[in-house]
Length: 487
Ligand SMILES: Cc1ncc(COP(=O)(O)O)c(C=O)c1O
Image 1 (tube, rainbow, N blue to C red):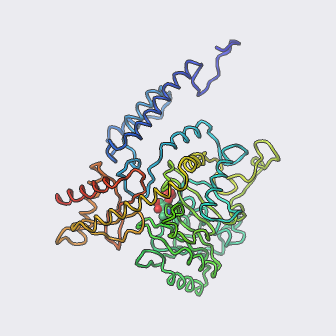
Image 2: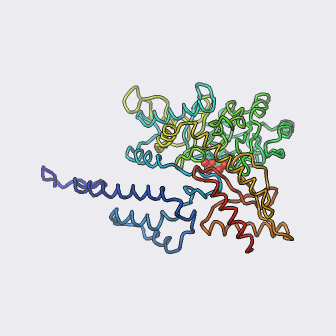
Image 3: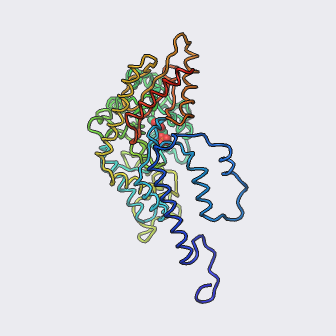
């Protein structure tokens, strides 16, 4: 009962000073557990399969009544926390995952307390996002007037960039759809391009067949002569080339297209130039590596991630569009309930919802802002160089081991290799290497992933991990050789 004798209203908050004190004590304990989890990461297996018993404890009937928070937290630490992806571990070396950073735990906690909806309106979180976008504009050498948006990742960034490109190419697109242009618009990318680009074209109504997968050179960058030829053929067939997607770091091998040259082709041909710089784009942060992304500053749109090589906690990506008007024209829609006000909470400048498909959005920008402010660009550049040096070290070790075969040159942070067994056919090599990789992951010692190079199964080590050391890579090679002996 409150002082005027009324029952307190129903709420999700702890009740009274005592309730808050209990909640605070529990919150401190959980924070300690989260910190222990991070500090003691080396003591755990990289990954372990979710046991059926744990999966069962997560399952259950739709809860009609609540459970005390303390019991819930215990359940999470026992049944969920131990079965993480593993990318916080120094020997997580698969796909292209960032490894997170402790400072971001604090940023996420503060953002959660604010619980801001960053679709729009005039409040602090929007200013933080604008500042992050301004830093990105400077980082990538884009001109003033660039617009952008924080997104879940490069898949969404590619979708938005290509949506803007499509709308610029087809007059009246927003009202009438692709219409008469159905099946006629074409997009060009190397055969190594990430499939999020094909998925984006499907979603945008262009169809995955609109994607021309242009041949690559021996270094896995796009063959520009083949690109020009393909554009010429398509024009001759009455099609309308729309866009070239440049790869700044391919997912298979970490290769780069010649972005400057692609930008020149786009200029000559009147095409939109989009760059997928998911992880490789951030080579702009390193003096030693930035030559690889020369020309990225010429893109009409660029998608990249903070959650990969900047280790921002998942999820956090970005899209930049060189000409702000184009992004605004593709997405802005202001019905009366979202009308722009001359002041108050409904005021402020352009809202993020004017620049992408989402209206309600989380306060992703705070963790990115934290990462930039806490570490600075120079440190991220040095970490990228450290990862590339480790990949080079691993590549050299693989070359020295007679039982191992390096399958592609190491250009950045990815090392593709396989074990060779004398007398084994290609099909057997594929099958045995695949089994070996699964064993390696299931042992909890290390977690590389896989790909195919020239159709052959490859164990793929990707080092976008600020915790990985040389000893970790030695452990991987040692375990691979040990397992190889028992196959
Ligand atoms: C080159 C490339 N493009 C796009 C993506 C998709 O990015 P996200 O997973 O952040 O959506 C990835 C993911 O690894 C990638 O490596």
